[in-house]
Length: 138
Image (cartoon, one colour):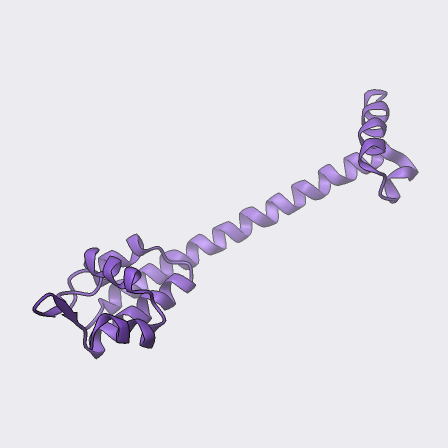
């Protein structure tokens, strides 16, 4: 099949498909004259690439497990990449939880400077003036 057909089947643009090929992610693509001729192997490979991208993988992360593997990815290598990605996600979740706690503390400090007025939303100019006046006096 030609690039238009594989693009339709995989929902990838022809430009993206050519990019995957240039990075070596599709292995060796057959040619008929100046035309690329794709097989079901490339369809599966492109679908795997798109699924991995949707899960947050960058093409550079996929290169090691897809590059030069005609037909089949390095499944063991892919499981290692998934493990690394999951570890990174857990670390990011922890970082975001810590950030949320910190933001909550800052918010409470600001509200305490505002006193009872901090319970309602002031207009932006009022907020700046109140913050300056209330917190400078502490």
